[in-house]
Image (cartoon, rainbow, N blue to C red; front, top):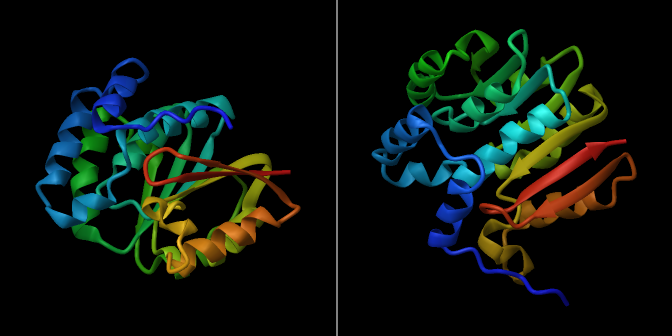
Length: 211
């Protein structure tokens, strides 16, 4: 078995600093979000943000969808990877939390790329149409399988879906670990329509490539 490096907070900061460091806008967005207290635990990690931007650019994505936007940190990262005429549709139920993100999207000059749709994400996802290059899902975990089945037909061949928090703090291997994550991980792993890679970044990020 190869050597696995444990990622401490200090090592994470080093990796971000030597990869794609957060600029002033992203840093201030994180700082404002952290003032929310416990809900700030839903923030995408800084290293994930760099990966989201890079993957968006890497696959040449022009149209993307995000399910679960919170305060807009991951949306900022994805939109920065899109071309000037790109589009990111964001689905979220909270006008209060997403209003925080809107301010920073404007400052970053990406607001024109983002179509924020407030409402029940289950209903909003079912109403999506057209073809997408990329999808990022970070919403209610017990609906991950439903989101996967709803969005996959809209993803172009060789397009990418990303699902956050799929390792649940490492508890997915415990007998009493979260059933929703276990069921989702098993569901996509056996689906022959896709290739799946699970990354130990943040709280676990699953990359799903549509064949």
